[in-house]
Image 1 (cartoon, rainbow, N blue to C red):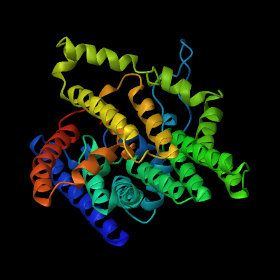
Image 2: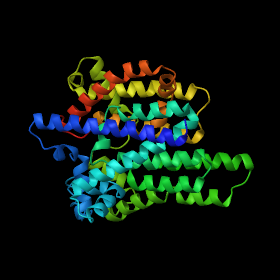
Image 3: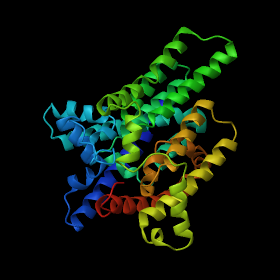
Length: 375
């Protein structure tokens, strides 16, 4: 199968799932008397839309505890909101513009993930990997006013460029990722690892590799510098995460409390998103181990990106139910599953895919239209 056919098949599979999921979400929203645009732009989506419409504005006042008195848009990276604003200038409302940006970059991400996967799992495996990735828990964000589609497009472009030994292009994609989400730091690390490995083998650093090292962190540095200036603190973004959003990195300590609740049948056992998130994290770790131990070994850049993205996701303090969304960006970890599935017959794939798709539609529709918190 040619690369073109792989891309067409992968994008078609991704688009079909997106349309089915939108239909499922619309039905669930109607049944619960909620407008579909409201649920598709809830939680984080509202913050991105606020930035697109009004900019970041002034920071909130400082309270007696030395922290801001309420949450602020400064915690959200700018590129997705900039694109929403740019599209809305052409006429669509901000929410329609946001969904359009998500849809376009979701298709771009599917194509780039497929191209990255082809040399790793073969043409059939690449289509399977994209299809599997498109139905994962929390894949509903590829239908919502969230920035994951844009970020995965940047991440796949970065890893694909590194795979093809194009460090400057990879660095540009990493910079785009750094303007989109804090996980862009994982892409910067991937570029550094790839460039460092190449330079070590040749015992010298080329001009384009040097340029890549300078360009890769530019987006992330710019995003963090903006928050530093706005807050008057060099650690401004991290300070906001810790104090205002009660988030940040705790090396998984808060995650362990959720597992303790699951094991002891405590309160988290009665919260479906917590149960799903707990299962996803366990499955993700198992897939990661299989991926790292498999043959051929994954590249250093792929490992650096995926493992650090997973560590940041699993080690995030609180908000346990959103961990499946954070793990969506680590698509290389799906390689063992894609490789195994690609060896199955078409009939067997259909038999496995049908209930998996149905379960994904039901769960993601519930998560978007019924669950009232972030996804």
